[in-house]
Length: 124
Image 1 (cartoon, helix red, strand yellow):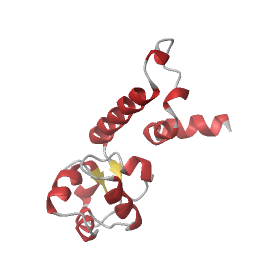
Image 2 (spheres, one colour; image 1 turned 60 degrees about the horizontal axis):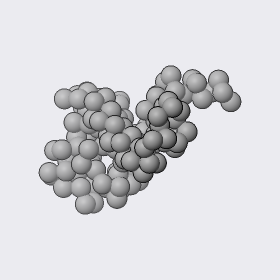
Image 3 (cartoon, helix red, strand yellow; image 1 turned 45 degrees about the horizontal axis):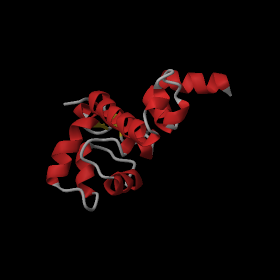
Image 4 (cartoon, helix red, strand yellow; image 1 turned 180 degrees about the horizontal axis):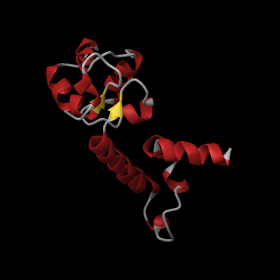
């Protein structure tokens, strides 16, 4: 089981780290100087920054990762998750409640691998 966990962390570190509770990360001897709530908030913001930096494949990411996409609320992330598989970023506009402005803000962080538009698998 440990080898599988290490392999998953190697292939997709962000997806694996989102699953780990903050108190189990082992960040050093001063980790316990912060309240668990503050630590969780900071780690959430850091994971949002990471998603913004690398993007996510909307058809293969977990719901926990999709909820970290900037400008997607938990409700919208759930609706996008339920609408999968998507063939292009434009399919996001068919998700009820996801308007043009939210699309403009979130589309750059969402990728669609193997879709009809080659640029949908990039940050462009």
